[in-house]
Image 1 (cartoon, rainbow, N blue to C red):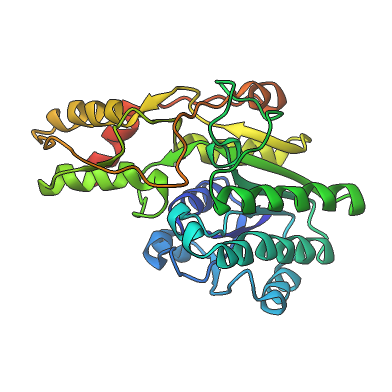
Image 2 (image 1 turned 180 degrees about the vertical axis):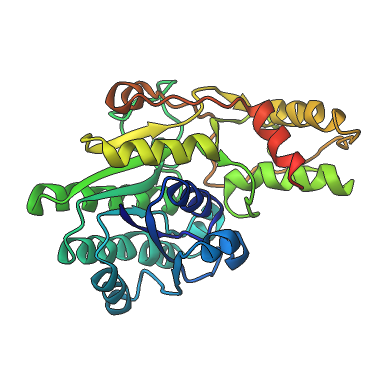
Length: 311
């Protein structure tokens, strides 16, 4: 199968690229390398993957890539993902996450793409939800422009499905972590804390540490993308571990994983909470299980062990 991955040099995108190569697909990557890293694709490039250094906001250049490759399936992961940056510059956030998504959809439609799998967010859309675990039909209450822009993008994916018959689905991730993760966005706390463990630095917790997240390992996210690409489900689908884990619990899990390698995590320092961040998050993944047989398989502790083993 011919596949194109936008944002394919990021830690999630490059992991997906590796999985596509492993199953024998022809793969092209679109990434402007503003946050993605070429070294994440070292093995992929050696295996024939094409890297196009194109910004998804550049409609004409993006269309040229699509026209040349004529992919059957597109995985759209290119995005502005930093919640704090979205608070500081919501116009930039919308430019990348909304207009960039429209450019991807237009290019996909023009080049005859069969299926587009969009990357969205769970906690960032639901905000401080009234219902935990939170299903896809819960009211949308973003606490930051990032969540608002991803919700707007979802609307365009559904619109192109209705108007033009372009098959689309939006995967609403929990807090993704795993190897190659860079220190960007709120989910970067796992990477930050792993760095503190290895380098003997004191981890910083913003707020009281009781705020919760629904962490999901990148290997489970990659598997969800592959399954969603083959399914007929449309609209939003939650992809998460399904567990509500506090930042303090994360610290304890990392202490356990670190102790197995003879490493000790310093006691955290607490800083004032930051605006735009959700207090509690746990996603209901029933729809993913029913629509394409997906559920998370890797525990947080096992995922942390994998990260530390590769550092």
